[in-house]
Image (cartoon, rainbow, N blue to C red):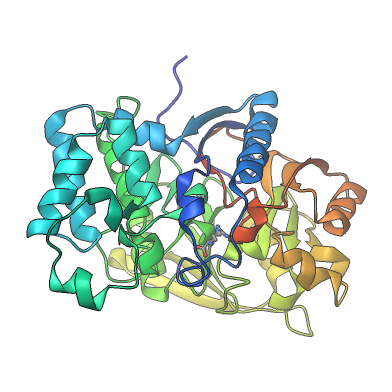
Length: 409
Ligand SMILES: NC(=[NH2+])NCCC[C@H](N)C(=O)O
C-alpha cells in the first residue's frame, strides 16, 4: 500500500514519516549582534548540534519512522528550471531584493548553483563579500553597513514544526510572526506544489501563507480526527485561529477547535512549549500556564449555522479534555514535577516539548531528567536524546519535527 501524502489524525498515532532539517551553515552565521533578532539565546556549536540532531533522527528511524529532510525535499521540487527561477525570485523578493544591481548579482550567483546548493545557500545566508561587487547601493553602503549579510541566515529552519503543520489530510502553510522566520514557509509551499512526492496529490491547504494574521505549527496540536487545540500565543492570533477553524469546519472532518490562551513571551512562545499530548489520556503541562485553581482560558470553537462559528468559554482544562476526547480521566504531568525551580528550568530547555512516536512513547531531551523521570513513573516509554547544543535554539523534539504521516489510532 502506498503511503498517503499527508495524514495526521492525532499527536500520538505511530509516527510513520517526518520532515526534519539538519542544522548546517546557518547556525554558524549567528552572531551576538543578531542572536536576539534571530530568536536564539546563544550560538550552538555546530558539530555537536549536528551530532545531536543525527542522534535524534536515528532514534526515530530505529522506531520505524521514515525521515525526510526539508532542504532535500525543497531541492527535489526545483528541478524544473522555470520553477527554480520563480522560487528564487520570490525568495529574493521576500529577502528584500526585487530589482537593481544587487538583485541581479544575487540572482545570477544563486541561479548558477545546483538546486541543492541554492536551497542550502539561501538557508545559510549570503555574505556581501561572496559577491565581489564593484558597486554597492546606498542601502548596502550606508543604511545596512554593519550587516555582513545581504541575505540573512535562517537558523530556525531546524524547527520544522512551525512553518507548516499537517492536519488530517491537509496542511496549514503558515504566515509566521517574526521576519527572522517568515521566509521559511516558502519552502513548504514549493514542496507541496512541486516535489514529486506531493505533486498532483491535491493536498488541501487549510490556510496558506498569504495572510496578515499569523499562526505557527508549534501552536497547532492535533488531538484527534476531529479535535484540534491551537495556542492563542505570542505567535498565533485569534483571527488566524478563527480563519483556519472556519475552513476546517467547512472542508474537513474537524468540528472542534480548543483555542488555549497562554502567556505571550519567548520562553512559552508556542502551546507545544507548555502542553503536549503523550497518550490517549496523558499530557505534559507547564504549571505556569495554570492559575492557582489549575485553570486557564479556553475558547471552544464549533460550527454554527450558515458557516458561522460558535464560541463557548471554559477554564477547566481537565474536564474539557475529558469531554472532547471521551476519556474517563485525564493525567496532567507537570513539567519538572511542578517544583518552583525545576519546572521553569526544565521548561526553558523544552522539558514539556515531547514528540510522541506512539501512544505512551515519546522522544525528549536528556537534560530534563526530572520531567523524564516523572513521565516514566506514569508509565510512559521515554527515549532521551542529547541536547546540549540543540536546546540553545529554544526548541525540543516536537519543534524539531514535522510529522506528515501517522497511523490512525
Ligand atoms: N514549536 C516550537 N516550540 N518551536 C520553537 C521555535 C524556536 C525558535 N527559536 C523560535 O523562536 O521561533
